[in-house]
Length: 140
Image (spheres, rainbow, N blue to C red):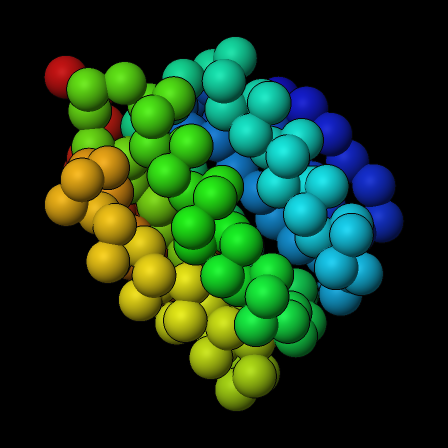
């Protein structure tokens, strides 16, 4: 099910495998990047999943400020919306070294807050492995 889709991003929910997703299609502006995360967060409130897939393989470079903003503001809110369960975030990383660095930076910030917010954040080289990991963590 697609919740939002444009030239830069697709946000939705896999009804069969029970995870939300955010797939970047190409680089976007800082404002768009944050706006897309707020759209995703609104959808997250509605679905209240504990599984989330982010495909950054085509995202492009994002600023340090945006990396910190996502790590400190968006991800903790996602964790709260997933209830008592641990939030599992599978991130498909880009081969581009700068994008990969940005994702790793967000990962470090997430690990700093994950004890409080119950977040399990893992990076993968492809969608197959990312989804397999999410499936291992489905709610009973």
